[in-house]
Image (tube, rainbow over all chains, first blue to last red; front, side, top):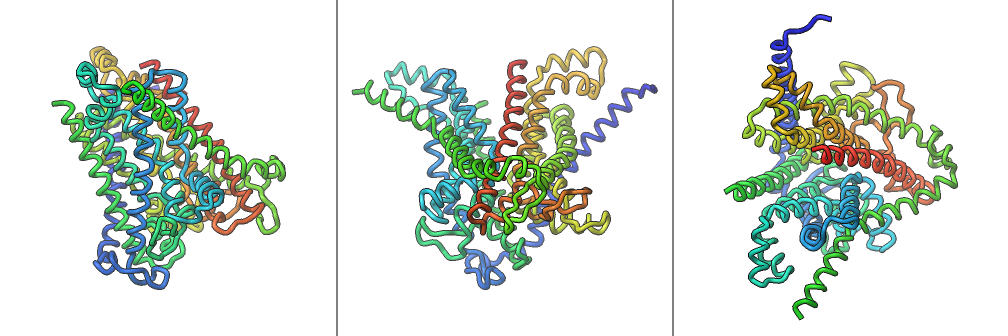
Length: 280
Length: 285
């Protein structure tokens, strides 16, 4: 076999690996620009604040925007206390044991379950068995279960990153464990916890499979959490798949992408600030 | 008083800490309860290995969907795994750290784009290209694989980077000091040392691909046929559930939950393999 000159192989490797990186970035940029280019012209004030007419062929997407705000917010309100308390328990109130390993294993498994299974579960459990029907509440509870692992993990990382000396000082001043958690640990871990919450909101806004079978797809503006609602992701899916309106589909997709990017960029900004603060 | 409340807090926290695992148990119970009795009533062999899916005639064979899910996932891996690992190696070994810290989160934005948007791009951009240049209906196994291959990139890239960065710097220095080029070091030292993490990232990506629903419904065509070529329209397990769930009742609905059971079991197996691989990495590191 001919031996290639390692220098040429080295150059070839840089070329191939660098090419792969550029390609990946180009795919991302293409998707974002493609949607924005076609969708931004549709985004008028009327589109954002108007009610859909004729199944979404005309009019705006106001109820879907409201749905996309309420559903993730309610899910976060349910999942955040559960997630933070779980991570406080795991990191402050117990040692590594079979029990914590079991809890971590359960969290990991939950994180790997695909959203369609959450949809099936939410449908049979919340919608049918608990008789909540297709409603904001069913959808939010399903989303809450789905994002719980993310919140547990990011909160635990943030709590573990709080220096040990902080705890020692607090204890030496006579504070109890819970006082230390409340006054010292949680405030210091807050930016990390908020990052996890933002990432979860981003995921909830884009979610379709878990939402469509639990919150339904009503186009009416909801008046209570027992009403069905339609999120932007579901609205976009229905517009695009049933070929109702290409133009309004682009408009909805653009709004969706902008919302998701804003939420995620805020999360990264918070994370960077958090890391910078920890270094200094 | 103080110690009592402290005890109470501990108890409450411990109870809450079981929320995730209780949710997991509830999900498992309800899916199994709704799906498994059907599988035994209909016959395991008939359900898994028959190609007859005609809900109106009470025929529920999901073999074409199992085949389609496996092929689409395999296709996604052919594209996503090499591309993702290449990006991870480039970012961790060739690019200065400050630049990597900008590019890595940018690439992770790929994970933030909703799956319906990927599906839409597949329908509008990819499917016409395939139809015009390669033939077939366009919405096909191939377009599904390509879209899923892109969707698993962030998973493969970020977990691979983490495990590559966990390789001690001294390994690389040792190799470079012996006169190896950067590529030789990557090829002979870094990749070997981070192998189990890279494999885990690919398996987790597979789990994501096999469970993906909305994007696949939009781009893969959804015909219940055994695929004969990559250009055929196919229906995956996930698509089967989501397409018919809205109007299914009785046995038909149970059959869809049974499809969910098959998917659930497949994913739990994949994720267990991945978590074993990741644990191996931690023990070694």
